[in-house]
Length: 304
Image (cartoon, rainbow, N blue to C red; front, side, top):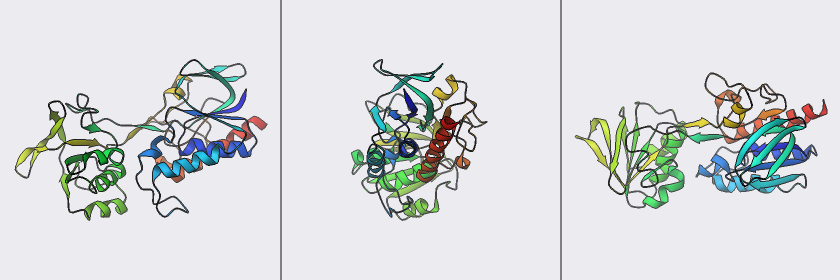
């Protein structure tokens, strides 16, 4: 029996594990993908103490720190089921392993949002991807499209422009929602073309992506020939485990938490991009902060 089960191997989860270990709580941390969404950040320039660091490198430091404690048991596996039992909570992992804990911290993060346009599903993995910073390398010297107007899209376009021949940044609005830092970076790239106030109606091709069709012409044509399409239109919180246990969500679909990061289900806490804390400001710093607060919440809960 563990004191706490932490689900999620990202920034919030690893930070929570560091704190629960410091509280001398027997901790089990698990997740299907080591590093979480932090792996998609090609450049992190706002983590205190690191002027510039790659997301995967930062997440490796988180992991090394968390797993340095004897109190922490670490495992990479998908959680198939989480249920309430008399002693606390029972977690079933992929492969059938069962682990029990007195409390739970859900640090499950978020998943990439799909565009829902024609051809997106058909060409997924054949030119359509959801992480420009991860996959841009495969399109060296080619033409690509990045769809979106937030941080991930604008950052992705700036990264892709380092290797691609031409990057078409397609956004349905005239203004970007991204940080000015990234907007300035992408504006400085001479091989980025801004396709604004337009929507993608279709992604087309044969065995792989050949281009996108727009709702309004751009440079005299309603199609743009590209070899790759990076869809960066935000993310949705991963809340399945929480909802199956009856945890309350807010009106935006995020897990509702109290100031100590506890959900509406006693003994279940949540931290990171899946919660309504931190004003929905999904950053490394806010995820780490929520992870620390959740760990403190667990400690206080167990003491009482």
